[in-house]
Length: 475
Image (cartoon, rainbow, N blue to C red):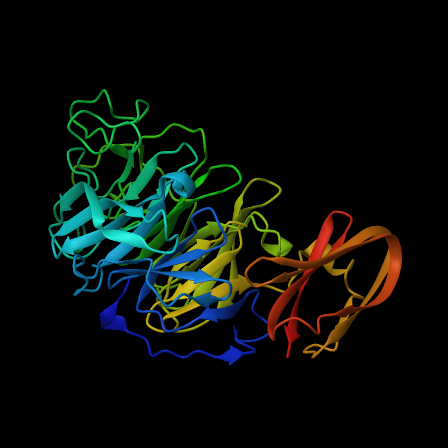
């Protein structure tokens, strides 16, 4: 089972309420639509500023800025991109950590049905919203035995190196055993240095890559045993790595690597799928088990995991420290976090059926976004829930009228005095107003938003170390 399952295409069914995608009060998340009209969007990221860059499978990158899509593409390389099959196309984007000054970025795309290409491009210095299609420098090009399982995600780690996730090359079951072959780059996580180049190469090998002294293993390899790691991410707070690996027939898995731990991990494919044995031929290694795997079952799980991010934003305290991800086929969203006893806990957040969520992204402030593939939409991930221990504290919080045309009333009532403040954000994460009320046990105040544009806003209410979020609709 793979990302983009044309054989199991599900009819699109999207419910919009105040531009919000939700099935009702039982869901722990709400998706607020920010953009539409995208052409098969598959990736979203930022470049260290307030813009969001959206990758379209067909070969274009668009910019979302100040609440709307810009009319001109940031990059259009459709003539260079092969996107005719389900898992081919322009698949990944990463901006150099010094992009603001050097204007360098990297993409992962299929140059033909059998070629994966990792390339460097230059953005224009004079026009910050466009790049130069003719500036391409190919870092590496890899032969693919089949058109599926190409991975596609590329990201700079906190160490400044470029990480590249490659699938096993397809078709099904890794018939050529690339995942366990140390002399193949397929089925691996690669790690390269784009700033210090080896002689005759467009990149260098970090000296601490795990196999640099192994003559039988490619130096680029950082981890092995992956099937189709469609999306991975680094925790922006601590550098931990999360890899969502799309499964074969039975299991979708989430792999985790804590920052600072030894690299060279073997995640098991094709010997293992999830926690179970898959193909025991030539299997004699120690494998790292996933921290969680869910069944390849449309009724209770899904069929193609879409990896997400650990939430480190400020607008939705309920998400703090939770890894949020989804399933492409069913539209289920989950979170993973550690319990006080140190165990990983997976929780269902929502069942937003039949929306084909292809990728998550985070902005410069750590707020989360998700893309709907066939529908061509981008949403912001939001919630109005508070953690269990905060429910009683904010039980007598009232915001009304909501929706409103000009102002809304905020009533607070706490059992004991607390240090209280509020912040109001737009959906781009911009702080619009704030107020510190000091130590109070109750409050009734009116907040004027008459001059604000119609739309959705997020009100955060802070009480000592606790917080809750409320969605405000301005008509």
